[in-house]
Figure 1 (cartoon, rainbow, N blue to C red):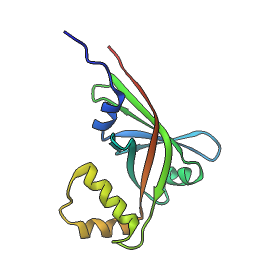
Figure 2 (cartoon, rainbow, N blue to C red):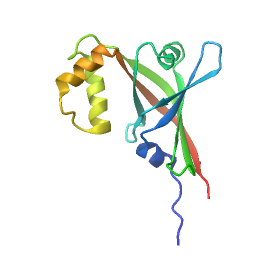
Figure 3 (cartoon, rainbow, N blue to C red):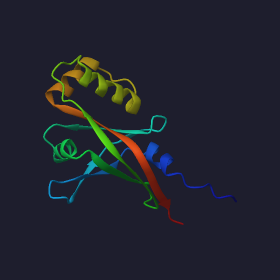
Length: 143
């Protein structure tokens, strides 16, 4: 039986739960559970969050971040590191900030049953799209 080599990018692409690490003002890490979407072709990670969260404030001050995901059995993990760009929050349901969140949703989950409702929620929730340019990926599978 041949053992398939471990590819941390495959684990990243299949994971919908991870932990985002950002840097607090005092230099300590701040960890947040998030629902990431990894666009393997573009080498970009996308996360939707809201204005006013610690991670958003940290990333506005210092755009460096890392995201860790773990396999369901806990025997594999992958970490992506990179620099983040923040888009939003938007005030216009049809503005570019909300359009970026619509694109993210379509990539991550497909079509929404009510785009008008989704767009209104993105504005009222003060949603921000976090996009990480993935610069380094590493991980391991335990045997």
